[in-house]
Image (cartoon, rainbow, N blue to C red; front, side, top):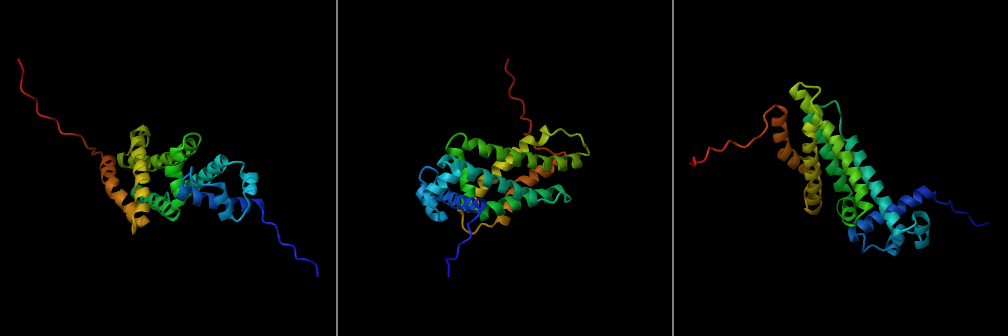
Length: 221
């Protein structure tokens, strides 16, 4: 009997295995400490094959960032049902965000820590992802604000800063949740909703916070 030929694994599948291994190593060991030998061994391939597919350590890291950034954005978008009230949409978006970052801690480490601390072009890749999420959150808040104010033409700039602040808080909270045993995605989302929505809700109802006027000081002749 002749030898049985094994079916070659498609390049796309093999490449995803390499990226899976790279995300794990980069996320746990950091970009500088990660070695191509380690990544190849974890992926079950030779180091030359990793270089053949992905050219260099820098290109491999960039490919990891792009894949994980796309997955995170898609998870957040898919988690929101646009027929719900504004607060429920934000709740579902935050839930999707914290679920994804909690289930993929190595990927979140790559995006939130590693890519941002090793200069361009890595930081630029993450900036693009963040801008997309901020734009999405801006639209969620804007829709609620326009409805509350009964003003369909309320300018986007009125809520743009709120979206930036909310996304920044979510990023920090995700890092904390991943490092704190027992914190669930639902708890993380609830924490941020309780922190943010009371203020957002008042703002949407036309009750913005403002400092009280200080009493005038003594008259100086």
